[in-house]
Image (cartoon, rainbow, N blue to C red; front, side):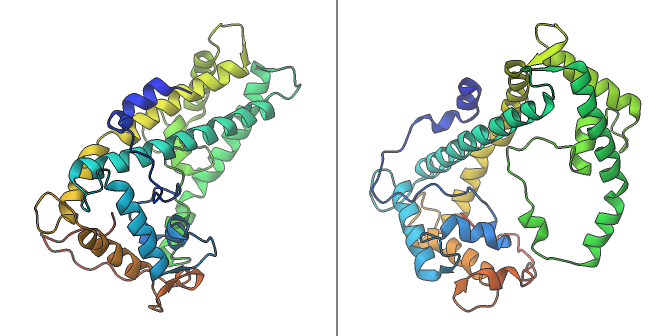
Length: 304
């Protein structure tokens, strides 16, 4: 693991919180999650029954608040709030990084058609042909997919399809294919651009220049890109978290009470409980989200 880069990207998380009995188990780190019912339930559903009642949600929030209140004085200051969020972000990224690397390991095995432990240039190029064909297919279908989305469909789909925050661009999507191979940024990928990008990738990965890619080389190239991406994901998180604290601290005394913290939680729960029956479940996911109200200049954001 590229622990040095990961640690520097999340530097403020190095001061670990003490282990508390009340700390909730690791859950997905999701912001604005009341727009994604499945993610909202997954984050807060302690008994994993696929349903989230208010009492269960409130218990989770109490545990999270106590875990954030590192000195146990019954309130949370901005440094405690920032540290708890950064610790969760670091943990999520470490878990997500391991998953991404394992997927890359499996991709290498699939590319190594003759199973000699190396990806030859012909094997790499054969994969490139498949990527090219798939990329052109998703590009040609981009307008139709966008048009279909504008006409309607599953209101939950955009949020539900939100990718892992660590996932690098993929040729499986039009946006990913363009990010990888549209060298001049004109919204199209010519064969010359594609071939040049593939050539550069092979040369960058083949560190010993022997014309073949070992698994170590393949993983090292991917991990370098992944760690640069992690750095971009964590950049600015400290200042953003401080802004959220300021929004939650409604009396502006520099201390956040549980009542202030839970006021935000109540807004999130109510937004997720679309049929207003007191429980967030699959029935809510089938309903369209409520219209977003006009935000006044001094309005406070939902979510924490």
